Amino acid sequence: MIYPWGHKRRFNAYSEYFRSTFGHRVQKLSIDAGFSCPNRDGTVGTGGCTYCNSEAFNPSYCQPHKSVTQQLNEGIEFHSKRYRRTDQYLAYFQPYSNTHAPLQHLQKLYEEALHTPGIVGLVIGTRPDCVDERKLDYLAKLSEENYVIVEYGIESCYDKTLKRINRGHTFADTVRALEETAQRGIKTGGHMIFGLPGETPGMMMSEASVLSELPLDTVKFHQLQIVKDTIMAEEYINRPEEFKLFELDEYLQHMADFLTLLRPDIVIERIAGEVPPAFLLEPPRWKIRYDQVLQKLEKLMMEQDLWQGKSYKNKM
Ligand code: SF4
Image (cartoon, rainbow, N blue to C red; front, side, top):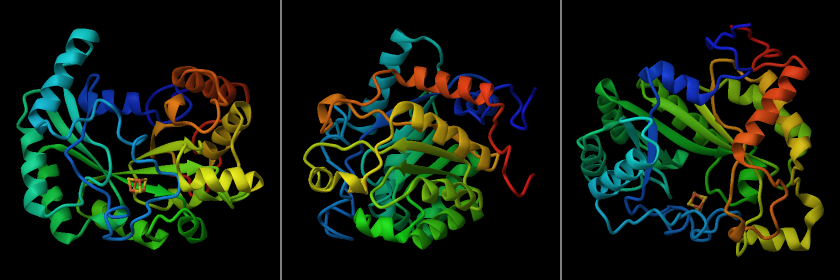
């Protein structure tokens, strides 16, 4: 069976979406352009999100002292030698909040990336409270000629949870940012975490219909993992009963059921996260690689004859 997204996989997978958008494989190159986070530098707050350990969110390949061009060229050289599967790349402004700076500074960095040979677009990770009209108008202009996607940390659709994890913004901020971005013709992405404290499996499942109402092009899902040296690690040690840390089989069933409720045109970029074991409070619960997690999910969906959007109410 060919699904509405044009292939046989049981969900609208990112790799196929890229192939159909660009006609071939495109590699994302993570760069650290030296941004900070408004939830850490005092603009919104100072403590940061309770699950965030800035070390764990700042991978070793990120070197903000190097220019954007240098980081991209090094990334291209690495990938072209090692994988030789593509000669087209996206500049992924990843750590912290990559729109948290004056517009002029953003223009300089984004345009430097787009002028680097081999770079065919931008992926910009940020918070919903970190964009404004001028920045979005500028990004809209850039996206007329380039692939540009703004990825927002949504994390939860519940204000109670957002408050508890000290996100420093509300769900209404997320809706506003996504709408204002999409209205301008800019692609939008979202990031969600399953298992945040205080959320029941039913609450998490209900988020499928909420996300389906949003103008989202892509979404990444992560299972909660407790990172060392965070406020959440202390909470977990003191009150473990308030957390839902998924075992692998349970998470696969959760994802399979969740996807059946999700709007079919939302592209699934990731179904789970991978925190390096050295940063985890406890040994990893799942002892398999991400590609194996994906394979298991697809097998489960096949066995149960499930597919993304199978139970989506407003069928397209
Ligand atoms: S917004 Fe991102 S970088 Fe900032 S504290 Fe939260 S998780 Fe960490």
